Image (cartoon, rainbow, N blue to C red; front, side, top):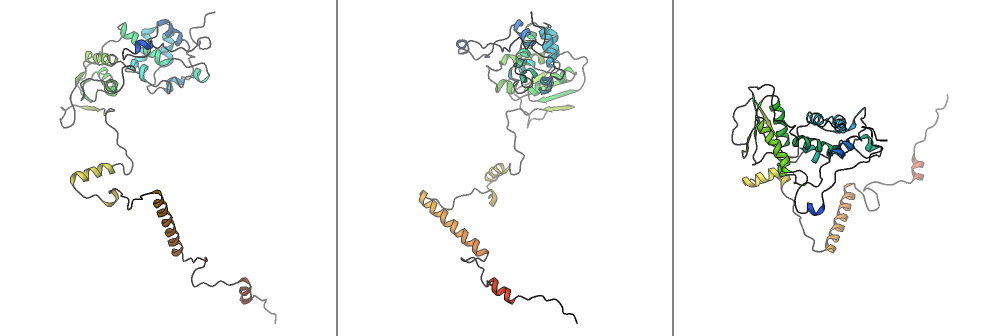
Length: 335
């Protein structure tokens, strides 16, 4: 008996996309995993249990409707599956490749917790979007109406490209500025090709250009003023480190500034220098022993203690003599 269209995780085991041959991978820098074939994508999508409370969706930072496009993929309705996937994600093919699914959606999968192996959500998402690009289902942006307002976005990284996609879809005129010669930011300059091919990011950029988004590359915003616009979107990106916000985090910076200006550093910012240098372990051990003795002697002198444990000027009375001289209480006599 053939397994049902869904809930087939009991009969169908988990199967990830096959890796390319090692000899082939040694000659290039392309991606490690090959693509799913359509039959395998349908089979792996049918393993979804269609939970009443989909933990895969709640663990996704974007809130993707994962059970919906898994069900559509299992039914062979790939175009509708792509529309559902693209409704909540601007770059689903990028998320399917570099998103840490094992800690997010696949890590929260119910059948993974039951021991049947998680649904290969990332691989299916990648297959859906790559198929959409191959069959021409990904169209340029066509806003329903054009607005007069314009928005400048500083930074053409993944956040800047996603913001440009959303704003252009709403009808705004968008211009993206970036200091580098290619748009993509960390996706281009920070992730190697065997995890994410650069052509995948560039075709997203070309889709934005075809939709009316303007890119000003090799342009560093800072001393150069921007033209006046109603709105400005700033994306710092991952090329600059983020400064600490705790107390004393700016001390090294203040020290460099004072040295550059020739000013004398305050006492608490001056580097500590050792007062004496031990030439051998024996001298260092003797030095530590002497310090311990002096510290112990100062502590006893501070509390007024003698070597016998008595303070100066204090007499110790024995209990017998104390009891003899102590006053006694008598009952009053009745007269």
